[in-house]
Length: 377
Image 1 (cartoon, rainbow, N blue to C red):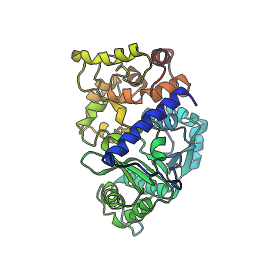
Image 2: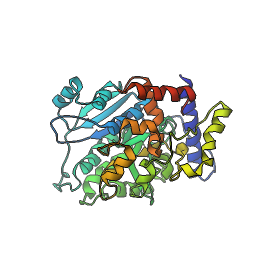
Image 3: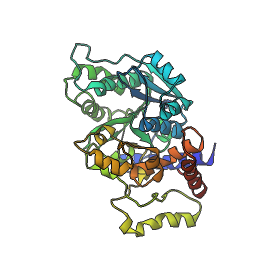
Image 4: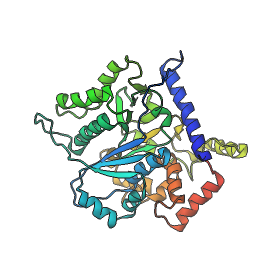
């Protein structure tokens, strides 16, 4: 096992213990037991669409790659309604660099699903692919367990401390107290997850979240009283920001003139002091730099980012430095935003391993950073 992997597990383990002690109020020890089933080291994404060709963008690719990088899972399942022939055509003749890169990730497996558009009693979905995805992910997790991630959720560290915590299901809060569904863990056939899956079909009424996060929040409150049935993490763990549009600038707007210095565990005291010294230059900081040390995952809320009611195209062009106003590789490598800084360790690994196609200049930036900071936990 590499030093990087060992340090990542150590840091994640310490954070998991802090989280659990916070939830338990600092009293008593956690009885993991000897017969508790670990959450499978598998990851599930759901990608739905109605086009005749399959394509992913840099953000979707990065979400999948980050899960592979941090977890080294047995498999990453992409559950999709795209016909297998379309997936096969994309594999042999991908239309762009990031689709090619997705197929290079060794743990990725495609699973064809039929996307539902109504409940079993015929109530039509009102939320488009989002509601179809709600039903697919719940069915998959109830049967197979593992880790579910939205296609714009980005792991920031290994989930092994949570997978082996002794709990049958692990979820986290989002702002305002409800349970967040962008990232969750479960053992196969969890009683809570099976109940959630069954009631989702019965309670669907066309509202945006009544059948999803509102229902699961109520169930978690009930099942928390059963030993080791569900672990409810604080907001910082799996959903550190929110669905509020005011959080989009905090995540994506450049906040530093140049790469945000690494605030990471380092054996070189001089480098550690240098990293923390950036805080003295207040004139360079436009808004707070986020410390991701308490987070396993960050959700990007891309549907909000690309909704012009919240963020204009002109603003996105300014943030991302691209004519189209899309997130791009140069924006991420510049590492001037909280989002780019969060995903950089995984992205840097992809560049150095040749998983993603880059220019010589882009590769040199990753190599130089790796020479200065060989370990990013």
